[in-house]
Image 1 (cartoon, rainbow, N blue to C red):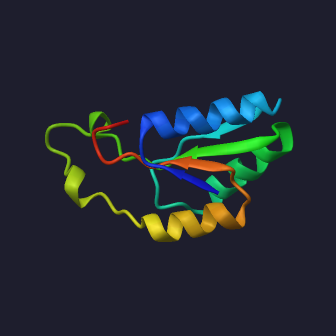
Image 2 (tube, rainbow, N blue to C red):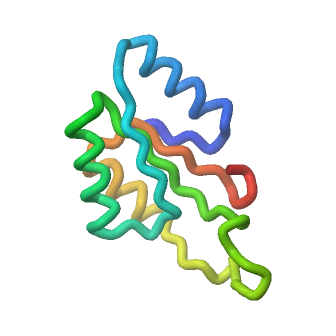
Length: 98
């Protein structure tokens, strides 16, 4: 699985997948993956050649009184789950770079 912390890297990986003639299924959860997310990964794998995920807590999804810094995150666990699902690549920008 390719871990892509930058826009440039994920674009390179997607371009390579396209160059190989592969279709891509995108699943964009914010992280802290659970069975519902994993079901989406499996569904994407059924209809595409490669699954790409994003793990990004987007600050614009939080209101002024919501605590972005306290949103639960466990990137190591998320990456392990994505590997087990056979995800081809994951975009993991730092907060605010999505």
